[in-house]
Each structure stands twice: as C-alpha cells, then as structure tokens.
Image (cartoon, rainbow, N blue to C red; front, top):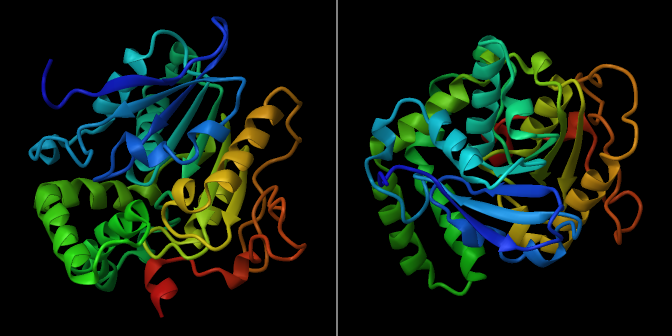
Length: 309
C-alpha cells in the first residue's frame, strides 16, 4: 500500500443490513476527532471513519499531489459496500465538493456508484464569487495559518496545554503541513466560486460553529443557500470543531437529519441568500432557549476577515 493511500476503520458495528456512514477528518486531524460524538451518532447506521493522507500522522509529501479527490475516492472504495451518508469536516468537506463537481462535469454517476444518499458538510470553506478573495485573504490564511492549528490543539486537549507549548506545537503542525499542503488547501478554497453547486442535488446538511474564525458561519449559510437541497445550522458556543465542542448537539443534528431522509423532502429550490435570510431549514437548537439558535444571515460574518474584526 502506498503511504499516500486512504484507509478506513469500522468504528461502530450495527445490524448486518444497516446502512453505512463514513466520517472524514479535516487537515492535520485524525480519526479521533469523531470520538466525542461517536456514541450519539445515528444508531441506525454502521459507522466507519477514514484516515486520509492529510491527517496529523500522514506523510509530509501528500501536498505534492495536485488532485486530492482520488484519495477521497479511495476511502469510499475501501468501504465494504455502499456508503449511505458521508460526513466531512473542514478541508475534507471541500475535497468532497470538488470530487462531486468533477464527477458531475464528467457525466455523473459517483453518488449511485457508492450508494451515497446524503452529505453532512461540517465547517466547510466557501465563497460565492472570485471577487471575495483578495490579498488580505491570502495574508490571513497564510500568515495566521498556525492559529487554526493551535485552535485544533486547544480543543483536542480540552484547554489543558500551557499557552507557550500549544503555540510551539501549532507551529510544528503548520510546518509539517508545509507550503505544498497549504497550497492544496487554499486552491480548494479558491475554487469554491467555480463549483457548480446547482448540480449537487443530493440531500445535504451544512453545519457551522458560531465562533469559527477559520471557516466562519456565514460561509456555511452561503454554501447551503447555493445547494439545491440543503439544510443549515450554526451550533452556538463553539468554533471549528463542533463535533468535539458540542458533541451531543452535533450528533443530535446529524441524527435528526439522517432520520429525515426517510421522509419526503420539501419542494422548492434553494433558499434565498441575501441579507436578512437565514438559509434553509435553520431552527433553534434543542435544549436551548428559543432565540439562541443560529443568528439571522445578515448578522453573521461571511468571511474570516470580517469574523476576526
């Protein structure tokens, strides 16, 4: 096996005929990112997770591969049968969108081939137009890239790391990702305005974190509005890692969405994405007072630069 190949692991068994769910970690993460939410994910599904080349323990030269979609395809191929729902976090959500876009331009068939019935896109990066990328955007994601790595370390450790050690570790993770790895990430981000989202017609749930300064919640809402059949929800009180920071609420949202797949989807096209709209099917979170759910679309920063002001 090549060191750049993707592998999959059975995380939770189910009945022999149960549908499968595949979990895809993001950049510089690993399969443990799902540990906190795993027990509460849909009991109806057999749960698998993938170890991708851009994991925290992955090979350092994965960034030399200009097409990461094949690595994601390997993970789907490695599953022992159809994958009903794919849950993808952060950069892997963008690799998944890129894979579906390329497949659509080539004539389609990927969803049917792997049996994919729905997507859950967690903390994705998305901008609707090329004009939204400028030199400040590049400077932010390049020069502050280590801050995203540091946030991952903080969340995974539960805030137990001393600040100086956390910062030093984040810089080591950034250096391990390297310039080529960063370039692959940013290329995916830059291509988001070019995605033919109108052709990605499978059911989707887009989840964001209220305080995410890497992939801010406005981008989750914008992506959901661009997809023909997507729900969106912003989880309050958390950032880029809602599956850890709000594990039970995250799993509850995923479970409710998966349960809804057996019910007829509402008719109509994408929800409006202009100021003041909140994206499709956005509701307050369970177990929280009414009004503490997702903020209206116009009140949520769309880009990371706005989010940090």
